[in-house]
Length: 120
Image (cartoon, rainbow, N blue to C red):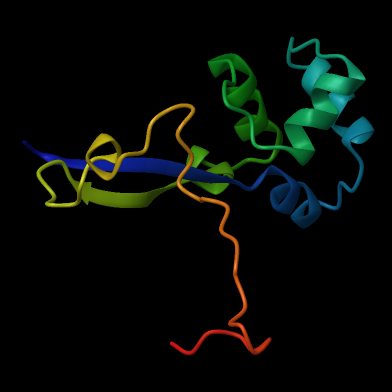
């Protein structure tokens, strides 16, 4: 089997806005509206402060036009984790881990007859 990769990304809209002296998400909304992108204040706020999981291509293109930048300036993908699918690590079921069967077990420490903790 091939190597498995988990991909992440960094969203740099806030940094790009700051470089263009835009500090509030409310300042971005009219710029988007002038390009035919009608988003609510809450949607624009989430676009600026969060990392969008989905973004329409027209919105992405409008952002590139507003800031005269390339998609790479706004969106930076990276490899979060690499793992070989054929790794020799044990599977959870092989370790006895299953729903309703927790890994941690409650233990009770019993003192020796003289009141001291047992020697290890």
